[in-house]
Image (cartoon, rainbow, N blue to C red; front, side, top):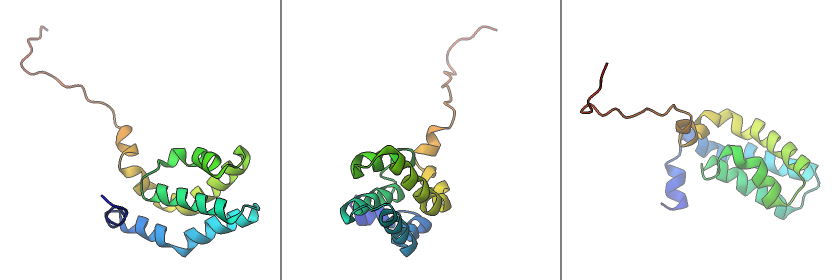
Length: 119
């Protein structure tokens, strides 16, 4: 499935978040406020898009920002927290719905109905 097909298979709220000026301004303003260059801001924007496209688990976002943008852990935490608050929280239920949410369900043990049991 290509990027466009993935995008159109997302829920409307996620599509809106990806295309939103608010998302773009949030990422850009955080980068500028912290003195990051355009390339680094672009990397953070790309990681934000990956989370919204469900290609990157939200739980890995902070670590990826630190590693891929090559910034220190404290700054990565600050930026990731702000993006989570402004961009991810309004659509968090949708981000967790597929994959991560199902991992939290309890495992059901299969019962063999033909196995002889003794009471």
